[in-house]
Length: 167
Image 1 (spheres, one colour):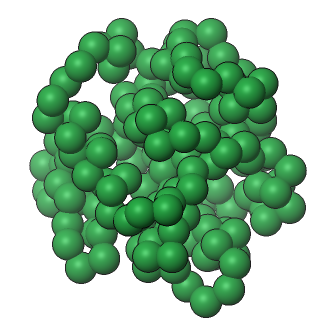
Image 2 (tube, rainbow, N blue to C red):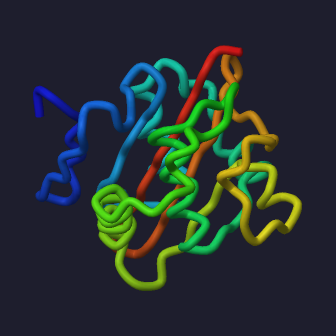
C-alpha cells in the first residue's frame, strides 16, 4: 500500500495507516511457519532487516519471556506507536476501536493456542500488566540498537513485531 504499511497475512493483506509501524524503526512479519523450530523461522526472517541481523536464536532463548494475549495486544500498540526512548504515546492507553480491532485481527490470524513472547522487562519481572508504562526496561537483542519485540507462534503462523531505535 503506497500510503501505509501493508502486512501480508497468509494470502490476505492487512493495511495499516501510514503512521503505524514506521519502516525505519519497525519490522513486521507474519507468515506460515517454516519447517523446524519457530526460532529458526524468526531468525531467518529477520535477516532481511539490517537492524536485526545480529539477533540470534540463543539470544532469543535467553531473553524472551512468555506473555498473555492481552499483554501481546498492548505490546503491539507500543511497537506500532511507541518510542523506546520516550515510551508509548499517551493515546495508546485510551481505547481506540479501529486501532485495537486491526491489531487484534493481526494477533487472531495466529489462530487458537498461540503463544506470545517478548523481551520487555515487565515480562521478566512477572508483571501481568503495565506494558504501556513510560518507565520500562528491555533485554536488548539487537546489538546496535535498543529494541522491543513481540513474537507470536502457533501451528498456523509466526508473527514478529519488532521496534528498534538508536539511543
